[in-house]
Amino acid sequence: MRHTKVKDLLNSTTTLQEVNAKGWVRTFRNNQFIALNDGSTINNIQCVVDFENTADEILKRITTGAAVSVTGTLVESKGSGQKYEIQVAKLEILGDSDPEKFPMQPKKHSLEFLRENAHLRVRTNAFGAIMRIRSVLSFAVHNYFQQKGFVYVNTPIITGADAEGAGEMFQVTSLPLDNLPKNEEGNIDYKKDFFGKHTNLTVSGQLEGETFAMALGQIYTFGPTFRAENSNTSRHLAEFWMIEPEVAFNDLDDNMDLAEDFIQYVIKYALDNCGDDLKFLEGRLLEEEKSKPQAERSEMTLLEKLNFVLENNFKRVSYTEAIDILRESTPNKKKKFSYIIKEWGADLQSEHERYLVEKHFKCPVILFDYPANIKAFYMRLNEDGKTVRAMDILFPGIGEIVGGSQREERFDVLVEKMKALGIDEKELSWYLDTRRFGSATHSGFGLGFERLVLFVTGMSNIRDVIPFPRTPMNAEF
Image 1 (cartoon, rainbow, N blue to C red):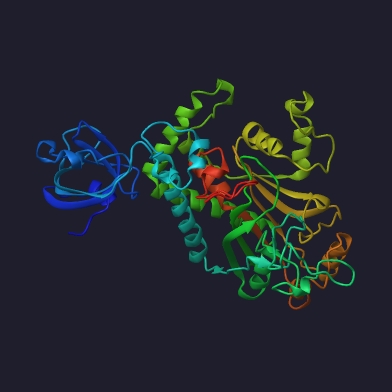
Image 2: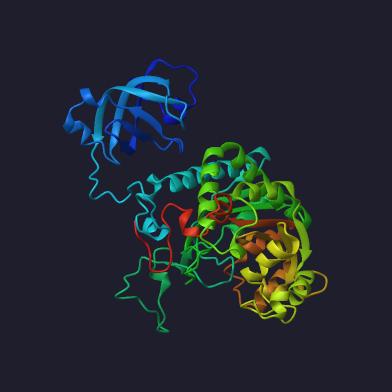
């Protein structure tokens, strides 16, 4: 008999049928009740064992974490909390789990402990829920862009270009590190390397994506990106996934409209398709909040926060207006901010972004027209000569979730900006070709997928929303 997923059994409309279920034991009570879960849903199905007619050696092997196969009759449950249960006629142990050694016992574990067991933490309710939501959100991303006629483009993971000009990149080499070849100047001779030049893991697929947008009209990328920042924070990863649409003929206003519509779509998709998992995570968050002082607790539950984003238009505010608000704010005047805002041109920190969203406007905020000297070279220079057509979307609890801009389409202006920053024209000659041949207004943005998953699940640490986090001094598993 083929086994049926637990989710389908719990949603069944017919009882008294013989069924087979396979999964992992969550708990086994009174030598009689197995809570079985197979990962298809956060809910377990209760399997009732006839212990009087089951051998003791089998009963002893029904332990938390063990893989089992049960065959029996699906009946309406007599107990509360579940609609159906399986009256077990046949039970088979597929894989034993030593209760003395299996770390995921049915008790409360710290998130740090679970990170140390990232290969097993997905067997807990919380991480099962997070990873199912991550999967649904990933599908929603593709669904949104495909429905709107965007072309999915796979940009290179290994690249010679640095889209951000940040310099914090992971180098890729096949050269022997204990005997590096040198050229006549005494520098490393990258001509002898695998690609014949200095290469890195990508920080963004944007530059390559722009070239495709200037032929296909509207494209998006969705792939891994890498930052060698030594940032040991709850918001940074060395390896993460980025969603980057690029659209020909879109200006900054069009870009803001696209980003807002996209975010609201994927959040609604999660609400419509992950009800049980979101409800569980909301309960988890409420329990966690009880241990915090009243002033630090969220004003909204998780589901209220998600619906809040759907029901409110994002407030659009210029950087200049935001600086004025922050400069006059109480935490700035009382020096409560770690970084005091003194003058126009300051690079906003997470504390400033969250103040604007959570305290001042009390809704998602889109900041635009940033100072040119704190933004990347490819952003379009405004007529004032000091600001660029950049935009960031700020969310409660997260800060920046999206960064984007109208791209600088004027060849001469872009070349001047590159020269001022010491960016080699020859290295990016292929990128400049999009401005040499048929240039046009175009825009795009980047959304860090893990930040989106963080917001939707209500988790507080980005390491808990990716299967195997990569952070400074940590590349386990």
